[in-house]
Image (cartoon, rainbow, N blue to C red; front, side, top):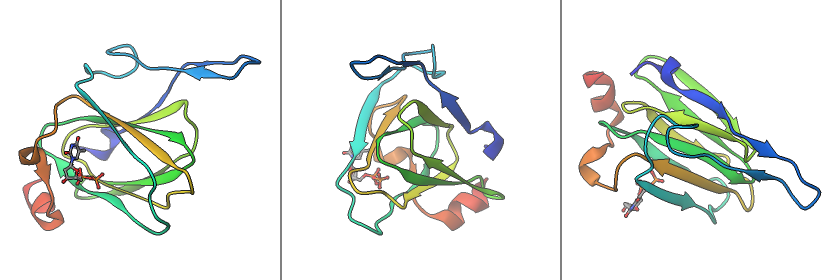
Amino acid sequence: MNIEAVQLVSLPKIPDDRGNLSFFQNRGHIPFDISRVYWIYDVPGGERRGGHAYHTLQEFIIALSGSFDVILHDGRREIKYTLNRSYYGLLIPNRIWRHMENFSTNAVALITADRPYSEVEYIRNFEQFKATD
Ligand code: TYD
């Protein structure tokens, strides 16, 4: 997959004196039906998450709170996105290597996927990923 297929998606933001509201929904803001949602939190300073690609699975990542960097690689090019607003989401197609780092204190990464969890979806060896791209 080409790194240019990665998209930063701007989500609705409904401002209100009582607090802002944002949302996303199937096929409205992301091009797939949500099958699974998980979140990463309480990341100790300096730790990394991710470090893999998926064979067919797509994900959509939001910094629900705080900030972190998502580093993406398609086997040829690397690109870094800093997520720090809860009304932006990063759409990552299959076969894109990613890791997340530089988590702020209290950062919460909300991740939506188009498939249930399955270890067979993972490509965890970067050299193998590059070789088969
Ligand atoms: P992993 O995807 O490697 O974490 P990350 O990419 O965020 O660093 O998953 C870590 C562990 O959690 C691994 O043992 C699999 C398990 N896991 C689930 O059981 N269900 C899930 O939806 C996810 C994402 C992970």
